[in-house]
Amino acid sequence: MTVNNAEQIKTRLMEIYKKMFEHFGPRGWWPGDTDFEICVGAILTQSVSWKNVMKAINSLKASGLLDVSRMYSCSNETLEKHIIPTMYYRMKAKKLKAFAGNIVEKYNGNLRQMLSRPLEELREELLSIYGIGPETADSIILYAAGKPVFVVDAYTRRIFSRLGIFREDVAYDEMQRYFMRHLPHDVQLFNEFHALIAGTGNKYCGNKKPKCSRCPVLQECGFTR
DNA sequence: GCCCAGGGGGCTC
DNA sequence: GAGCCCCATGGG
Image (cartoon, rainbow, N blue to C red; front, side):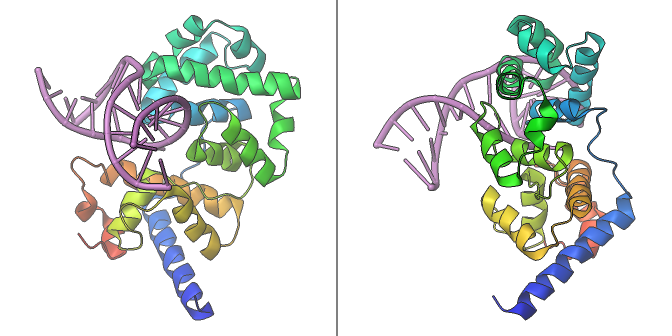
């Protein structure tokens, strides 16, 4: 790839970012009072809308379970009751306990200590925990640890393939490399960009009845179909 | 009633 | 390593 080409890609990505930002404004992501709440939200939001995640988070908070050691020591059944709205609740209870267990056993319950590890080591560790795949790991790294990694998701795939930038079947790592190769590794930029993509996707780019053609941002960005 | 969603694990070949 | 099923609620 020539330098010139890379510059053009960067310019194009930043144009899309700016149009999204002008349209939606700052998204204030990730919502959450503590690092642990952000991590819990990242696990619970797998395949489910944020509205249902908030119900579960509030329920956990109200019962004092939004705490590493209490979450780890409570029964699966107790945990399940609070997260029913987030679908796959039995699986997700296991995932939450695996995450809390990792912090208790390796860091004596100190989440910040784990999050302070170098980016690559942290990513590898997160991926080794049951229930944490690439997207969840990257969300935790960016939004809880505050380290520069670009989070991609189904909306990123949909939006950027509809803009003619990716193939429809592009892999997670390939999308991520694309953004990280062409954009400055800036936590605030990565934070806002992913949040804007999620906002745009949530409003206009559902799979069932895509409304991309009605999205002002995608129209301006050269939406093709 | 039916379809499907911002993901990940586990299995098969 | 791609392809397929499983998980199992809630909203359109």
